[in-house]
Image (tube, one colour):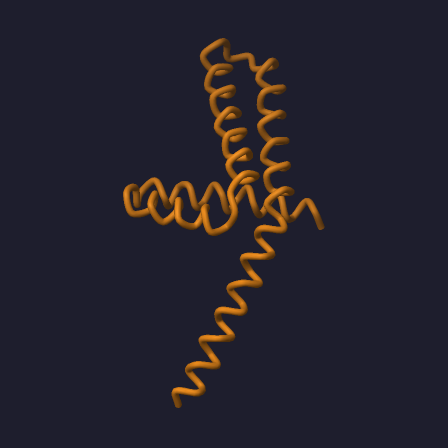
Amino acid sequence: MSDTVGKTQEKAEEVGRAVRYKIDANRGRVADKLQGVASTLHEKTKNLPSGEKAASIAHSAADKVEATAKYVREHDVQDIMGDVETFVRRHPGQSLLAAAAVGFLVGRALKSED
């Protein structure tokens, strides 16, 4: 029984390493996609008919997306997971919103690669 548990745990660790490697291998592409989103937001802000207030909000959002791209590019999976865990513990409600936004962006980035 303990032999089976040991093998299962070993297999789970192997899968975990493979997933971390795959995520690390794709961080650059995800960061590039986020940078592209930020650039598009900055560019499209010029055509907003709503005035300076809307442009300011759009530029602020684009700046945050750029910061996220930089963070993804500069941190490995281990760092990101540690930061996510700390954030979730401190801000559980905001974490749900952030998870939905990140999931959407990553899904779109990976979908457009296909």
